[in-house]
Length: 246
Image (cartoon, rainbow, N blue to C red; front, side, top):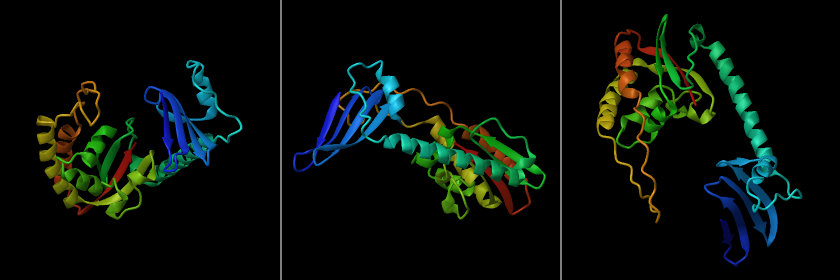
């Protein structure tokens, strides 16, 4: 498939050659009719010129990359990887300096631990679980619950989802607010699990989409009751929360 976009004056500003949904693609950007940039894609993600050329072997009619154009995508990917390494180092340092460092680290990439003195409670979940809470309109308490458990920098603490893919923050939470949010959330996620909203096979496209796969069960109906019990048994007004998610 070849797509071309033109400016108001009729000049070509962008041209993309590709197969599938970015199975492989190359995008050209133009200014005043001259090509100024190339961007490469393979397996639905932006890649370097070198990776594109390796993938192009299986697509002989795809145009070759232009070595005369600087590979800005490769430079950007290098910066992304550098930032990810820095985020990981910072997360490891925060872990070592936190109360969480006293406990065995879970194998899961998505978890939080509520810590009160020598007592603690671990909650393990999947990335789709917290994403449902942040996006699903039929679970209005979801976003408040996330804030009260340190998922957002808007809650008045340093850190949160905006810090990057590798996250590990220790914050102080209001136990009563956390308990109330958890109790309300349990009611909402149970109702959601009992009657999940239907996903339309049509989203404005003229082509019918494949029947969506059934969503895996959410963790919240299972993990919230023991969390509520733990919070209910604590006398302290505040607790530590170590939050780690990808």
